Amino acid sequence: NFSSQSHKIVKARKYVVVNHFVNEAKPTDLKLVEEELPLLQNGEYLTEAEYFSVDPYMKPYVKRYPLGITMIGTQIAKIVESKNPAFPVGKRIVGNMGWRTHTIVNPKFKDLVFQEHPYLLPDIGDLPSNTAYFGLLEICKPKSGETIVISGAAGAVGSHVGQIAKNLGLNVIGICGSDEKCKWLTEEMGFDSAINYKTMPVASSLSKAASNGVDCYFDNVGGDISSAVMYQMKPFGRVAVCGSISSYNADSSSLPKCTILQPILSKNQLRMEGFIVLHWMDRWHEGIMQNLQWLREGKLRYRETVTKGFENMFDAFIGMLRGENIGKAIVQV
Ligand code: NDP
Image (cartoon, rainbow, N blue to C red; front, side):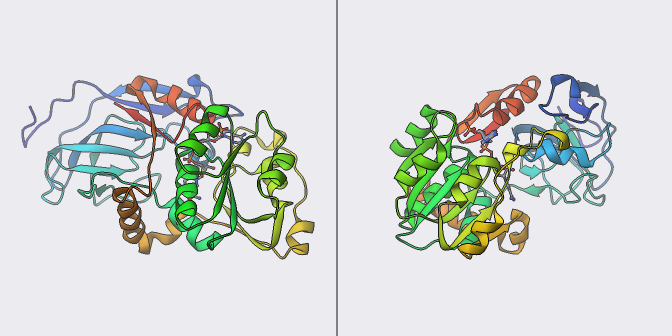
């Protein structure tokens, strides 16, 4: 029932940040509120959220912004009313509109938090991430026959990295937090071996799985797991630092203590490089199309852990941070 002049939003809901997260996020750090949206102006369009991504980065990033902002995050939304011919009703977009069910987007104004506008979802079905693709190929520079270790291996990024590495002919070892995840990686995702860091000693398990040492390390977690891996790296090994989720729940006074890395970096002439995937914005399409091709050829598969209901956003978010997800954690409205 959307006309070009007015819309009937009975309930537009959003989560407002009322406390910055300290240690583990609490439900009371966010407040679910309702709002009435104004009429559309020329150039604007109205979206209705369908899927939300819940991601680890949200936890540390939100501290950069003042209290009172809408909780940050990306969503896939449908355009339900439009006064902008470039964004017609019925098309879907991907954007950083935060945790809100309905959004009026005005392409003339930059987004408060991410300073970028939503883009129309290409009509390609699956939409795989580029983090694994660029981080692995550009920083680890993997070669057939080498050994790679991936931490956070059963998550969205890690499970993707492992499959690309396997396709390239590497010996792939995953580190993750449950036996169910290990089984999934080795039996379904093609990993050569997997280590449950919660029940197995990482260093000795790794020296068995990678008896000749490690060439590449794709690091999603940091902390002690990463120190153990890095002390088993071969000369001229490459480390891609994608994230450090082991420290995301800690505040500055309780950061995890871990082994100093400089001796092994210098002795084995290792290269360790952090990255943010937006670095490859100019090659974005290349990554999407390559991943898509692998998906279509059956060389890349993915799994989603879907939580239903906007009112369950927080549970999905905290569940992902606690490791309850296998593959990509999303919320379906
Ligand atoms: P995941 O799907 O991997 O979900 C997070 C996982 O982290 C959990 O499932 C849990 O699995 C694991 N985890 C939680 N706490 C710890 C801990 N203390 N130690 C070890 N593992 C832990 O998330 P993503 O794939 O979306 O993200 C993975 C990493 O990639 C994150 O660090 C994220 O910040 C980073 N990232 C970086 C980008 C970049 O541009 N550099 C872009 C996107 C993501 P388990 O059961 O194994 O503990």
